[in-house]
Length: 419
Image (spheres, rainbow, N blue to C red):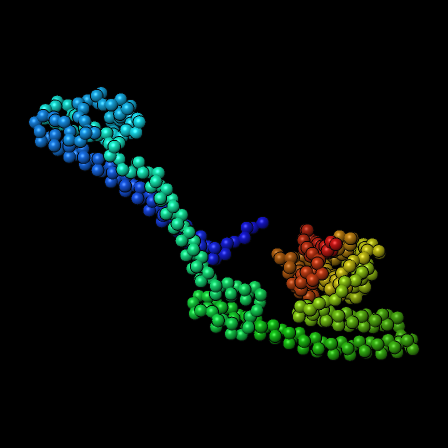
């Protein structure tokens, strides 16, 4: 599970807090370096001044500072200084025992054969180290105050900067657009975004209105000839009941009547889908009977083809689904199998979990994308709904459509919704 992303306001607050923390840390660090450097330079200049004073004298004399001594050899140093001494380095500062602190300097005097050492024990003159804890506490308190001020400032800036963007996000989320809503936003980047959203929204609204008008007009225009076909079928069937018509012609006429009713249902369903309307209640459907009826209606597609059908469905298998939508899905899948199948056997089986359709593919109907099989084939005059609409129908009914290709076969699985 992905963690929820921080809002833009939270990012601004955190940016201000991190910037304040970075500035406070750098200020404290450089301030500590500065005060320690100043203190060390003070003692270094004391030793340098004492060295100049000694060089002005013909003989070594006692230093002016009470904490400073002259030694002719490192062996004469205090014991704690000898333990820490590093004679081969340029180090001039050492910490001793019991809080003592030493600064040393070596120089050559005309009265001495070997270089002599100035050693200053400065523990009584230290300023920074005795107040180090208080200084760090002050830095900590100052940093905390800066962080609080930065958080407050960041919150105020974030609230002011993101308020228009938050309002725009709420409009988008609640889909509460109205013409001219972009004028309520400031003339900055957010205003440009709001204006672009308004223009896109207006284009989408115009597109939806055109699509709804087309669906309404198309459904009306299609229903008129369907009504004529259906009424003509009813009249012809009524005449057949009084006259001796061949059974084959009567069967064909009944198929036409059934197909016209089916087309009328399909038009109503597609129109409802385009308008996002309720598509009716679910019913108990006997799958075997529905499949047999659909295969009978689509059987003309197999005329002249060397294709056999093998149907394995339990007679008592029932599904709780929307009958019109299920019929549309099954019609399209069966029609696709009949149109694209090569010579051989089409296997259709179903159980309580899924419907399985396997059909051999033609050599010239082997596209790289399986979805292309729902398009018109090279040797067919297909008029299927297409995979996009089939998938939408499956979503409406809770079905799951799976396409696979195994060697020269197309395998279609339609998984029933699990209750």
